[in-house]
Length: 576
Image (cartoon, rainbow, N blue to C red; front, side, top):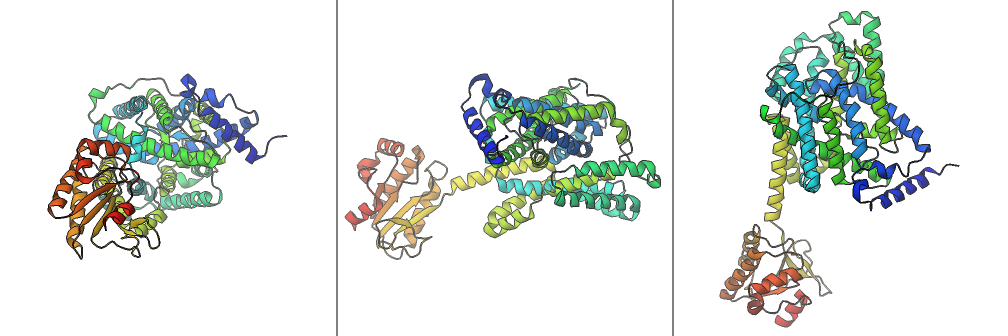
């Protein structure tokens, strides 16, 4: 009798916990861990999930390849080899690897300026970018840089994704209306499309709207099912067996039959200006999206992923993409959700998906000849819809207008500057936001909580009782060279605004775990300035490392003993 699902999930989680302690070569080769505990009952689940993922991935990858400016088969190659190689090194058990809308668009708009109109050069640059990403992943893994991605805030990504979604959508709308389109950048493309609307092919538009309706209904009522494949099959049948093909539909046409060749790109990094920035931007998007999706799935399944190991998984997938005529790949939440809901238990599902896709490439490519481009546009439009999180933007507006403004900076940056520069803007804004917060820590001025000897922020708790003639404060941050002047200025501003003369200042250092040399010297200078104004300074609750540097700077001799046991209440009791 097979174990119940909850028991099975619990046992799998316990096995994962035991695997967390694995070291050596098995630690960097996850199949050595999960294969040891693999159950035969999982094989059917993985096989069904793999076939379902392939059915979902083939039409989506055809659509995304058009975003990247590449022939449709290149998108299929991404799914074929990306997932297969990720399965060897990735730590997630349900993450699905393939082309994503944002990365495809990023590759398309950036490589367009590098390719000089040569399709062969375009494909080589895309493959070269994937190889550079693989190298960057290995270097990041070696130097343990996985945590650096945490510096990109969710607020920034929220605005970036919304901007990327609109940018991608405006490239697909001409296909939906059956017009040529054109223009560089979001706004120029919108103006161009508006001018071409009188030339709309209503047969194409009606067909595209019908495909959109079916895809949206399928997303709502049949989540995780390969509805896009059904739309593709029906559209091919209609164009093949009815007179619809005579109404100006553009079709995919012939696709090369067979598996992709193993081939090094014809170009080298030194041959193409801009490959490294493009690869870095793609890596940033790929890693953030992949790790976010992998963590969400792992939490639902009751296990942990290794964020550092994911660098190797993504690197291996992009190495394969670069060597087998594909372009940069990543893990996406939509395809991973399909994989998960279809029952995937392990990365073996990705192997089944690759086998299924390989068989389709060998024997079924001619069936895609009459696939209309408007259906691919509909698939992309439905896919990018999920990048715009209106609910989260509304929540951000309610809870923090500042954070909402930051998100809109990233949103506007993508629309005005394009996706590549938009990524750079998002990174810069994240770093500037981090620096701003670190340089302007909150300085809390304290009052006694009624009925206790505990002191807390009087600004947040107006019922607290102030101490006449005393300034009690703490900084909710370490005291470091880039924020000490802000702290000093805040203290003097409070003293000058005090309703009565201040004779005692008590600085609670319990929330300042680190004090650097500049911080210690600021306190020494503050002591001298306060002393000249007739105000006594006391320092309390300093951490061990902070006490060491304060003593080295002579603060103990000038302001009194630096005792970790002395509290604000003790100083107030003995001094007032």
